[in-house]
Length: 122
Image 1 (cartoon, rainbow, N blue to C red):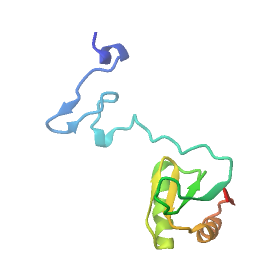
Image 2 (image 1 turned 45 degrees about the horizontal axis):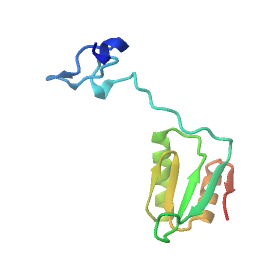
Image 3 (image 1 turned 30 degrees about the vertical axis):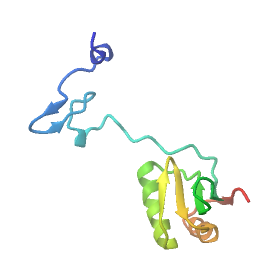
Image 4 (image 1 turned 180 degrees about the horizontal axis):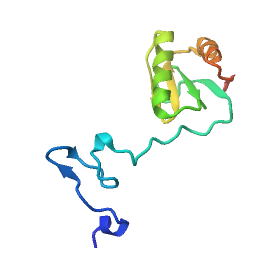
């Protein structure tokens, strides 16, 4: 028996007019509303800022964890903080990484945005 039949999901998966179709809601992938974005990681109310060099050949990065935002908002905040610091960085699995030791500047910026900020680590 086909695995899509077991789950009750069967139907159109590609249309020449609309492209790929969602197998769950049968809408085009671009208009799919059944796969809602997952909320961000659980937070205890504190945003933690730490510095880490592990696995980066001695280059330090500043890590920001515990921000209670979904993925899209976290990307937006990460972009804003990178511009403020004038450095590069990335967002990986609910953690914002900013290149260099930017802890003091990031603490003041996140404090201005209304977050309760704590230093973590040494």
